[in-house]
Amino acid sequence: MLQCCSGARCLEMSSETPRSVLMEIEMIYRYLSSPIGTLLLARDAHGLAIVSFERGGRPSEPLDEWEREDDAFREEVCQFERYFAGTLRQFDLPLSASGTAFQKSVWMALRAIPYAETRSYGDIARVLGRPSACRAVGRANGANPLPIVVPCHRVIGSDGSFTGFAGGLGVKRYLLELEGGAASQRSLLPRASAVRSAASINLLLAME
Image (cartoon, rainbow, N blue to C red; front, side, top):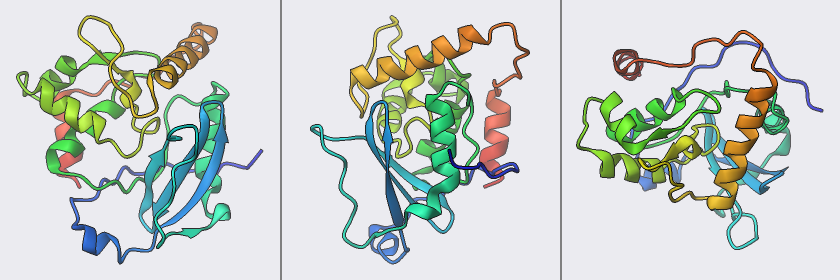
């Protein structure tokens, strides 16, 4: 088992960046075996930028410009291992995901969904103060480049049904059942609040 680094991590979602500029930023990657298949992890100098599921039963392919550096992902691997073991509720990693201001606000709201709980697209839209933006929230949810870390799997339909997920509905069900089972086993332990209000989410965005 890899040793975890200590210390709090800051959430840093970068502003939308033209692809031509992104190509000039050094990106490194590694593969990670997991109960849901082989994950592709990629990061730049600022933090984790991509978590990608298998596609068609095969691991996602990195871009030609990326360099493989397995040893540079010790903390990421450690936290993913703890998550899949049911002992990690909240990832604490520096993140470097590019997106629009609205996408970033949705992703921040996703990170505020408590472990082992779910929310609907409408719930997220209301938290953001845009109750009629359910479809836009759905598109931003689907564009999330950091699934699991930014838990878009916790978003379901307003009727409780499962909705689309990049890793497939089977993976989505597995993640929700994993969290539900781990939470029930620790139900007698004190639980820190993981809910942020719309005001606090807006404050975090304003600090970026």
